[in-house]
Image 1: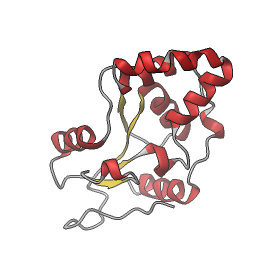
Image 2: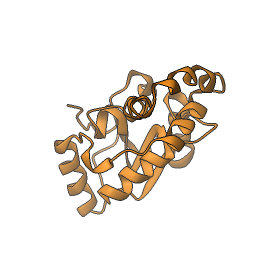
Image 3: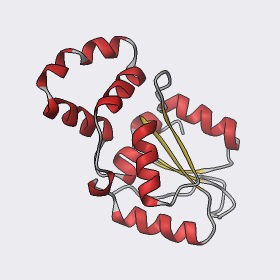
Length: 159
C-alpha cells in the first residue's frame, strides 16, 4: 500500500497542493494494462495493431486504445486507505491534483467519479506524462518545493 509522505523540507500543510498518481497509487492496478485487456477482449486482432501504434509513441498508443475502449471507473480497485486520506485532505481545504501517465479520458473519468480533484493532468496523443515530464510539469506549475506528491513508481522518483 503506498503511503503519503510530505516532501522533505516542507511541513504537512493544506497550503501545498497534493499531487496524486493514479496507477499503482490511487489504484491497485494499472489502467494501461486494464485498457489493453479490454481492447483484446473485444477482438484479439487488435494485438497486431499495438506495435504499429507504439511506433508513433506510447502516448499515441494509449490514446488509440482509449478511443476504442471504455472502462468502468466505478468498479476499479481503489486504495481505500488513500481515498479516505484524500477525502480528509479535501475537507480540510487541500487542493488535490490527479497527475498520471494514463490517458486524459480515463483520468478525467476517475476524477469525475471520485469528485475529489480540482485539477487533472494526464497524457494526451503526443505527451506521455511520466517520469521527467511529470516532474518538469509539476515544477513549472508549482515550483520545486511547492507541492507534495503521492506516487509509487520508480519512474517517478525524480518527482
